[in-house]
Image (cartoon, rainbow, N blue to C red; front, side, top):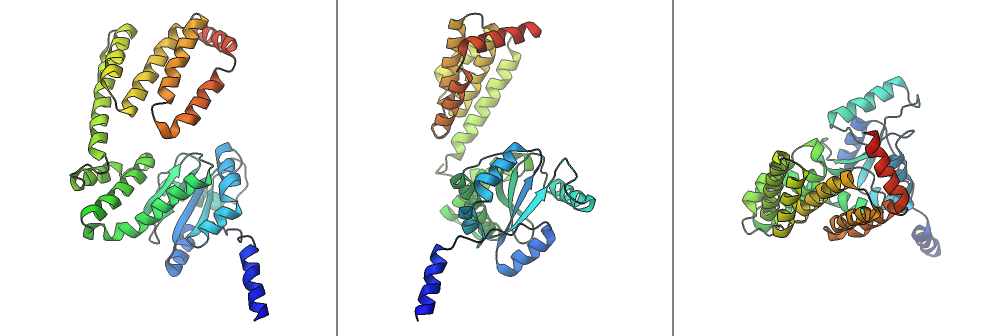
Length: 305
């Protein structure tokens, strides 16, 4: 009795075992099928991709991630280094897997079902464990929903389609987002997910893009932008209009007052989407840490062009 109690207590305090990152996708898929897991594939450039190393060091190599991922995934690393770190055969294999899934950006983290079907993930460096877990949890739900999607009805179908749409919108370069958006528009007749508002915003954004391209000069663009900002409440549309305004202002900056006016527009753009606002505002403030130096840089670049 004492032995078993001691073992149980030890299990509570021992760190999670490190993840076993495999290098053969087919073997991982076979293992996942046998264990009832999904497959997690990490596409990385270990000797050149700073964001890959950051994601690995801050998330994927941590005990907390091992504890989360171990029971849920068979993990695979597809490294594409510039230096000869792998055998020629392994490097060619990794390139083939990347091509198969349309991976061109690094890092990319993909979740596959046991048949190799894409169920989720994300592209780019996002080295925060809560974000990674959120993306992977959604992908795991997609693994469950995809085989029974045709049988789902009502709000359960809306939920599943919304998850799938958000997933493939994140993975837009890999396709399929439009397919699930169309299905979601048909299923969500009451606009519970806001998909109909999103479609309106998308159409409005395309209209503004067309009008700005057709404008006679930057002053005409600024008039279109001012009218759009007065009329439009969709954050994604406002961000694009404000960013175009910043580009026009940057091309005309001459004085410190001009520069500070441009900063205010950049801050307004940064605050449009609340969940991203703190990080975006910090980025703007970092850019303007040395206003005089920034002003000189902008003016010198303009002369160079």
